[in-house]
Length: 167
Image (cartoon, rainbow, N blue to C red):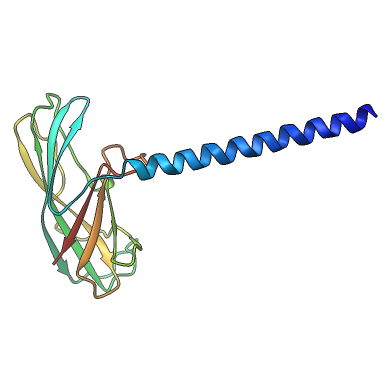
């Protein structure tokens, strides 16, 4: 008899845990939907604990890929995203590198970064300074569209801003 009640108690505990996990999962999904990243066409002003800065997509160029690099992904062409960042008031400087970006094509497929030669490399810029850099992505379709996600924290799951660009 005690064995029967013990099995029932264990079953109830497992059922309660499943219900809790489902509720937590739904809550997390709803939190992500409630606060989506802003979508902009070319410029965003961002705030960090250290201060404020502006990020702007200035141009997208579609070019032929370099002669085959050893680690380069397959690419029909390459989209070079030229961006500009302005440090409004961060005293210790600001650098925005290619690891802060992800890009997607019009079908939502994530694009791989491409080691294109002669890109503008990012650099540290002091308060009130502006710098231009670029990042390249492998393209394998004829779309003239990119959805570019920017992440302040490169380990974050949600972007801070999304740029939609056509060329």
